[in-house]
Length: 452
Image 1 (tube, rainbow, N blue to C red):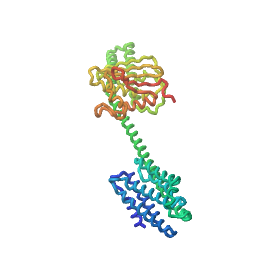
Image 2: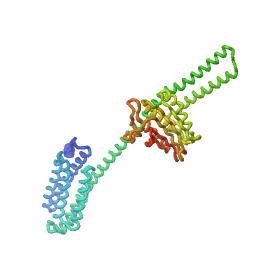
Image 3: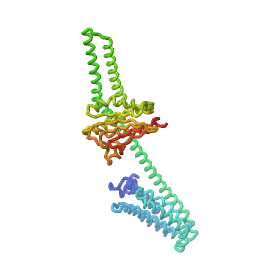
Image 4: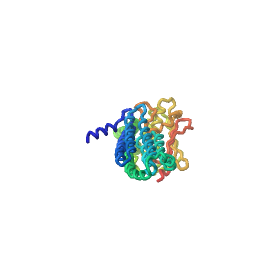
């Protein structure tokens, strides 16, 4: 039994070569197996026909079995990879046609044509669609051709009487159903394998998608932390100034105490100035805490857009001034209530200001202009810098993940991509005003937030 299985395996694997794709090798293997099974089935029927009194048909069956078996070695060809499979279909259809001519209508040999209509789908990969279409259509044409006028045309060539044809019909029926079951089984196996491969591919893609999302989240977090770390230098400057003021007032109080010149009005003024300076530091640290945290799960709530701008400027203004960048802010409305995720919108604005700062760093004329406008039911927050705009050939790519024009180590290319996703989640839009004289990014937000 093991010996037979080894022979079967060796015959099935004839024609398999590493130069052929896995799908091509699988189709070749199924072609070899079908050829072996059909050849054996046809050859076995030879002695049966002989015993039943049809020796000529028995001999023809044996010869037909050998012809079909010869297809297997033909599949070895690498120069003509489809030769064996086309010969298999041609020989089988030709043999069925000969059966139809010599056996006659009442044996119903043309039923085999219906079986042959499915074989092309089994032994050809999907990329050979012209072969599949031809070899699935040709048996159908031959079936209806023989049924319509073929039997009448070739009736004089039949070697059987009407009674013999009826007897032979009951011998042919089992082979028709046996071959139909064989082809159905291979179709099922092929579909099942394709389904398993598809499900495996879907799982791999889902895993890859999850991995990419995780990596993007890590990179996004890294980008955010990098931006916050860079801001820390400017925040240090921003806090150092009010701390120096507090120190100065404390020294004044100490001098007054030493001189015993404790004037209530002057002490009250100093205390008020200290309180205002502490409030300024509190505002800076509060703004930094808000902008640096993750806010994707925050609820949408109403907040004034001017407040968001103030918070962002509280932690970035000193850094701009330190780099010699002139900052201009223009708010064209007294009140600008907007339903949004406060932290995320602040992060987008901070990212745009950060990009603008990098863009003008090497220019002689360095300035950034932030403008808040009201247009119908939306707010437009424009971040304009002294640059001359974005090159048309890179403009379509600026929102792509990981695309950046900054030097290595300076940026990840995720800032605009993430900002765009945040704005989309708000049913807003982030775009470049290509008509403006200077580089202008516009963050557009609906007043009422995303429609639920």
